[in-house]
Length: 174
Image (cartoon, rainbow, N blue to C red; front, side, top):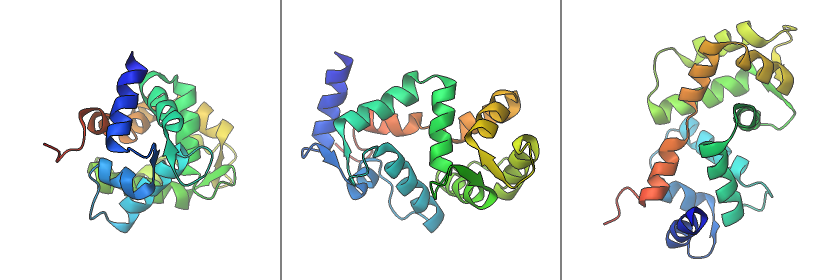
């Protein structure tokens, strides 16, 4: 029944059954973004677009919802890692993390610390071999072993607000 509800919402917002990047931004009412924020939204879209065809279909959409609502922490951390690893080389460097966190701040307005402070803190805490890159293993082990970092990452990158917009329909719809 719940899947039927999500399918109805998805098809109402996207009658073609495939959500392109432009429609994704429109559904979430994301207009006039800074270049950093726009880059982040594009990275989220491409991470949800699992088959890399340039569209989010219903199966990809439901997988994303399932991850956000029911995903275990290690699943979410793997997804976060994939999101941060903008160039897809299997490692997160400081530039990638700085870029993503700056973009998230631009969208969410999160300002307890600057993007530079956040990036430096993350690397100081979990870059075990001090090579300036985080592997998936370093990232997951480091975040799971540090409650403060886990909370900060979970809050900063929470996508539940995205789901609320989708669930309730467009922000500006009648």
